[in-house]
Amino acid sequence: MARTALLTLRIHRFEVFALGAAALVTIVAALVAAWQINAFGLPPGCMAEVMTSGPVGGCAQAWEAFSQLVERTRPLIAAIAVIPLAAGLFLGAPVVAREIERGTTRLAWSLAPSRLGWYASRILPILGIVILLSALIGVAADLYLAARSPDLDMNAAFYDYGVRGILVPARAALVFATAVVAGAAVGRLLPAILVAGLLAVGLFVGVQVAHDAILQREAIVQSQTDYSGKDRYVDTVIQFPDGTIRNIGDVPVEYHDDGTQSVDGVDVLQLGRVIPGERYPEVAAREALGVGILALALLLGAAAIISRRRPG
Amino acid sequence: MAPAFEARGLGKRYGRRRWALVDVDLEVPEGSVTALVGPNGAGKSTLIKAGIGFERPTTGRVFVAGVDAQRDRGGAIRNVGYVPQSPSLYRELRVDEHVDLAATLRPGFDRTFARRRLEDLAIPLDARADELSGGQQAQVGLALALGTRAPVLLLDEPLASLDPLARREFLHVLVDAVRADGSTALLSSHVITDIEQACDRLLVLGGGRKLLDLAISHALEEHRVVEDKAVVDAGHEVVGWFPGPLGERLGLVRVEGNARNGAAGTRHATLEELVLGHLAAGRPDAQRRWAA
Image (tube, rainbow over all chains, first blue to last red; front, top):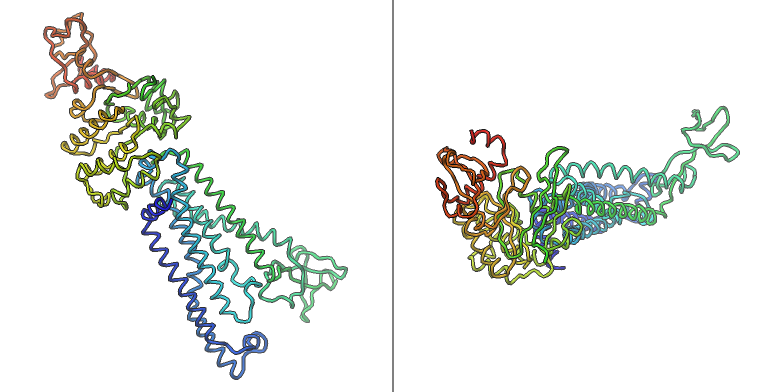
C-alpha cells in the first residue's frame, strides 16, 4: 500500500511539489503572522475602544501600529482562500485525465483486474495530501484570523466564514472530486481543468443556496441594534404591533426622517434575522459534512465512469 | 479444452454506421503464436481490445481462456498479458518502478522474472521511461506483459514503430517466452516479413471480416501464385488478383492434392503474397482492377 502511494506521488510529483510548497509557505506565513500580531500586544480594552468611541491616547498609537502590521499581512487572506481550492483543482484533474490523455491507462488497466482498485490507488494518496494541506491551512488561518481580532472568540463568530477551520479541507475535497470526475469524463487535462473550474463554481453556489435555505429556517429574530459582527446576518424582517413577522420584500415599508418605519400607516419595527455566533462550530461542521458527502458522491460518480470508459 | 482466445459472432459498431468487426468467429488454439494481419481499419485493434475488455462488443462474445471478457472483465484480464500499440509507459517513472507498479496492480505479478528479462536485454532499470529508445520501451512493455505470467498474450501492433533490428529482437524475446511458458500469443502486425519466422498461425482480417485463419505452413502449402491468367485451369480456385512489386498482375490460387507439389505455371506463394491475395479478394474494387 505504501509502495503504491509512493508511486502515485512520483507520477504526480510536479503538482504535488508545487502545490505542497505553496501550501507550506502559506501555512508558515500565517503562523508567523499570527505570532507577530499576538506578540505585538494590543493594550487590553483598546480594541473595544476602537469599536465604540474610537481610539485615543496610547490606544490610538498602538492601534495605528497594530493596523499597519495587520495590513502588511493582508495578502495572506487571498492565499488562504485560493491555495486549498487550487490544490484540489490542479491535483485532482491530472489523476485520471492525464493518464487517459497519455495512454498510460492502457498499461495500468490491462494489468489491474479491478479498475476500481487502480482508481483507489490513484486518488487516495492525492486526496490525503489535499485534505492534509488544506486542513493545516484551515488551522493556520484560524490562528491568524484570531490574532487579527484579539477581542473575539473566533470559535463563536462567523467572521471570515469559509476561509478557516474545517470548511477549508471540505471545500478543497469538493474541488478535488469535481476535478477527478471532470477528468474521468473528459479524458484530457486542460479541458478537464476548465470544466472542473466551472462545475466547482456551480456547486459552491448550489451548496450556498441550499445551506442558506436551511439557515433561513433556523435564524432567530432580533433587533438590528443587537446585531454584532460575530453573528451571521440572514435577512431583514418587519414586525407589526401584533407581533406578526413579515419578510421586508413582502410589504411596502415607508421610512421616516425620524428613523421609524411604517406600513400602510401602521408603525412597524425593522428587525434582523440572524444565526448567533455561538452556533458557528455547529453550522460550519454541518456544511463541511454536506460538502464532504457531495465530494464522496462525485468520486463514486468518477468510479462509475472509469469502470465503463475506454482507456483512451 | 477451451481455446486460448475465441470470438463468437463478434461485431463492433462505432457510431451508427461504421462496423469495425462483422460477425467474426475464430479460435486461437492454446500454445500457438498467431499473427493477426490486415490493413488499417481491418478491426485488428478492436478484436484485441475486445479481448481485454477495452471495447464492448456490439454483437457476439469474446472469450479469453474460456472467460467472457465482457461479463467478467477482471477474470479475462487475469488471463491476459497485453502489449499496446505504443508502449504507454509513465514518463515520470524509472523502469524498475514500472515493474513495481505492475506488481502493485496485478496479483501474482512475477517481479523477478520481469526484471531478469530486462537485465538480459541490458535495459537500464534506473533509467526513466522517456530516456529509453522506442525499441527499449517496447521491450519494457513486453517484459511487463510477460511478468504477468498470463496464459494468453495479446499484442496490438507492438512492432509498428520499431526499426528492423528492434522488431527482430522483440519477436525473438516473445517467441522464446511463449515457447518456454507454453502460453499463447495473438500478435497483430503490418510487418508480414517479420512474423513469418515468429508465428505459426495466420489470421487475416479485412473490412472487419475474417478472410483467412490457418496454420501458416498449411496455408503456404495450400496456395500458389500464378502470373499468367491463362494458366489458371479448372483445378485452381482463384482466391484473388493483386499487384506484384513491379505492378505486374499476380493471382493467388488455392490448390489441392498433387497440384500442391507444383502445378504448371504456378509457383510457391510467399506469406506476403498469401496475405495480399486474401486482402485483395475482400475488396471488389481491387478485383475489378487487377482481374481485368
